Amino acid sequence: NTTGAIAFGILNIANTGGAGVEVTIADRSGVTDVSAAAVNVNDGKLSVASGGSLDVNGTVTVQTTADSSLELLGTATMTVSGDWTATGAATAPFALASGTTVTFDGSGAQSIGGASAVSYGFGLLVVSNTGGAVSVANRGSSPDVSAASLTINDGTMSLATGTLLDVNGNLTVQTAADAELEMLGSASATVSGNIAVTAGLFDAQGTSTVTLDGAAQTITTSTAGDRDFIN
Image (tube, rainbow, N blue to C red):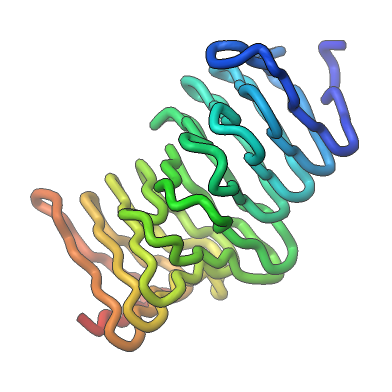
């Protein structure tokens, strides 16, 4: 089928072949390659090839065994309408190349969390939630979440107190009036690129800390956007 998505209900990966054995989603050029109501990687690896796409209308969970993992290669893309989570059993739950894109596009509350203390590394991380916040939990890792860039188009990304976010490129809040990056309590963020707020709000509250650790960086806002740095 080259004209539409291959659609699943709950997609479970339970491949017992060990390290290096994977289920691959291929790029079929110009279509959403696979959609699912939820994805559970219980054993083995789910890999999305460069150019491939996966649309998950619920939760993404990596769990059960040490070699359970989700891999995005090259320019693969993924949209997620539910939570993003891994258990403590998975030692390297997510392997997402820097050129890949993960978009959180729910219409209600979403979370990035779970019992895993491993840092979650994203490529291009996008928040386009039309009805709630994407909450990032403090899991005791350093950082809890890293990304090649972060773009918030709609909705809120909320960092819980104690959470560390590391953005290795630009951080942009844009498009919608309710787009927001919210940092609660003692949350912290490091940014290596530019910060631009062209709509919405950058709200660093309490004792939260923003560290600019790149070279020749800029902070820009428009009349439609605002930023509030506490520390």
